[in-house]
Amino acid sequence: MNLFVHLVLRLAGVVLLCLACAVGWVLLDTHRAIEKEASASADRVAGALETLYWRELLWRGGLSRQHLVPIPDWETMATMKVISPGVCVTFSPGSEPPRGLCSQLEAIGDPAPSWFQAVYDHVFGAYARVERPLSARQPLAGVVTAEPDRGAAIRQAWHQIDVVLSVAALLAAGIGILAAALVGQSLMPARTIVAGLQRLGRGDYSYRLPGYRTAEFDQISRAVNDLTARLAETTAQRMALTNRLFQVQEEERRALARDLHDEFGQCLAAVGALATVIELEAADRPDLAKDARSIRETSKRMTATLRGALARLRSQEVEELGLEASLAQLVAGWNAQKDRQAAFHLDIVGSLAGVPEATGLSIYRIAQECLTNAARHGKPRDVRLQVERVDTEGRDAVAVSVEDDGGGTLSRLGWAPGYGILGIRERVTALGGSLSISQARWGVRVAALIPLLPAREAPAAA
Image (cartoon, rainbow, N blue to C red; front, side, top):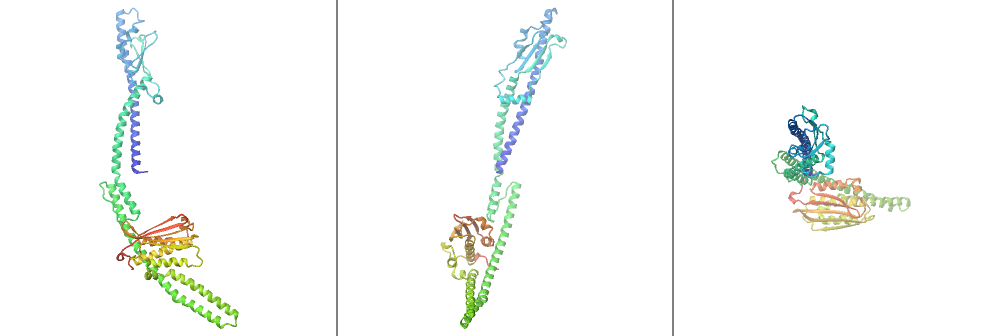
């Protein structure tokens, strides 16, 4: 998940948690306030009725105390004023039936949703009744009972929640937007660092990250820059060593080709000549003449095999004939094989003149190994070698690609025995290029992009 999105989601979670806490606190505070209003209403009504009780007692001279508080008198506006909105008060005057009075139930607010009523009842349950005697000195005078009306209490709680949520939601939205903007601005260096790491992963060791005012990002930037510098130095040393190894390899190839030609080739020629002489002198010995002919045929086959090995080992044709002619000769050699099943094609786009000698030799070896892999790891009938002079990002380069229709797969090519692909990759990497292996329509395509260095910057032999 994106870091910005991750932090914004966490911030939203914190905001929602704060809103939930605020709603819970408002509900609890509203519940307590309603209970306090019910208790206070009971005290005020009891006090008012007690005054009315003693007034009636004095007027009547204590002759009859059954109806000291007339019912119509206590259901007056003066009594309604002392009852808080949403509270119902019940007065039980002695042996008389109780009388109830509720204050301003419809003025509390709009009805609450059914789900809120269910949640409120589940959390807080029913309100407790508050009872107050009309007079502590006259227990038979009556009892005043106060209880919050359930519907009015829920309306009042919903009204408080609605107000708080409206204000809190606006504040939370504003704070969330500002915090998200600040988080995004604070994380902008991370994007630059990620882009720098991506360029580092692509092999661009010249890019350096800028410094930052934030200490953590500045430390990351310096660490990445130090890593880039060390990687650039290590890569340069590895490329120089690899180039030197390939130069030594070419020297060994030339020495081996020279030894095979001078020693083994001469021996094969001598064996063939000796077999011819034996065949001519053994005219009266048919069995001996037959063995001599067999030896001569075997030496011819060994000589042909030796010529093929020398052709693969030698690189003088690249140095003497040039890269284009050498590639043409390489493809012609594949087409000249007797047991070949595929047709090899060469397509050269642009001029290959001016390619440094060491780079040209590596291009030749890459093409040679790609053709060998195409013929070895599949059953192609058409193999196409394309060498093109291209311009990439202002740099001169050579693109080499070999595509076949042999039906091979990338998995088979990756697990194939030998060091063909590994050698190609090492050569391309040593030259600062890139190698890609992809699935073609009917087979496999191997493509290498090799940047060209001026002759004076070409890797020199140590």
